[in-house]
Length: 314
Image 1 (cartoon, rainbow, N blue to C red):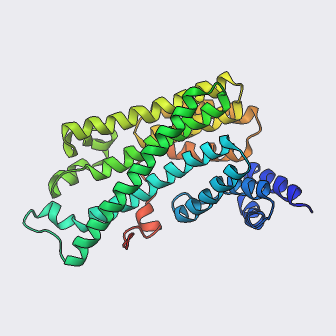
Image 2: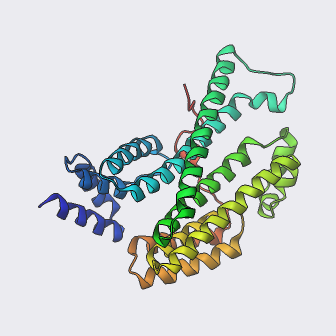
Image 3: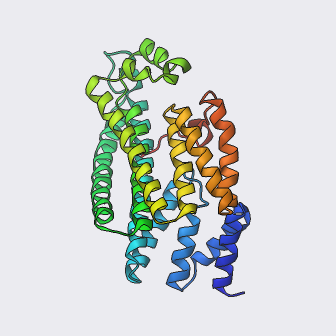
């Protein structure tokens, strides 16, 4: 079987939600000497790798994909991969923020305590420098790809860029929710009560006014750019991509406790997915529907599942 046939088979398996069978094929094609085959394998791997457990691996293959796309003159793919890189860099920021919070946990509760050891103080400072570097890179990429999207008349291209930027703001919203939290033991306990979070009252308890406005701005931008992506996909007649954008927006709205709007976009995503035989997406939609009904009462514990309570930066 030729590499082109293997690639088509892997992509068909992904569309049928047979990710376990597709992934080994894609890793095999990733070693191809044909740049176009390797690039398409990378793009397909981004659809199947675990976004939390395999972040470093994903960033590594994205960098390779960007180099290949530049060499073969596929500027639209370069832009797409830059958007994905920003999203995963935001994930790295989330890990770093979590580690920093752990390093000053005692100081947040007992104001007379600083760092437990000189080693922890140095680690905190190293993380701060790393965060500053990553945040600068993300902002540069965001400005770059947004400028290209605004100048383009290609609805497919614009839609994917706007969706990528929406993803960035969704991650930024979560990161700042963690990073800017203030508090003390009692305030934190009250702020984490389900019904306090359910009606977004934790924003009043756990954040300063300026920080709260910043978090709300991230949320609004996340929703805005996803809606722009949906509009562009609709204008270009790209219903399959529109289905993915609607689904991803529903996921973000659930995360923000906007369950009614999430349900509306999920229903739109399901209709479009059925019309376009998007088997894998439809499976994700049906699975997500039960999570949406749960209304964030039993959220997946990534900290315990992936060992994020361990040191994340050295």
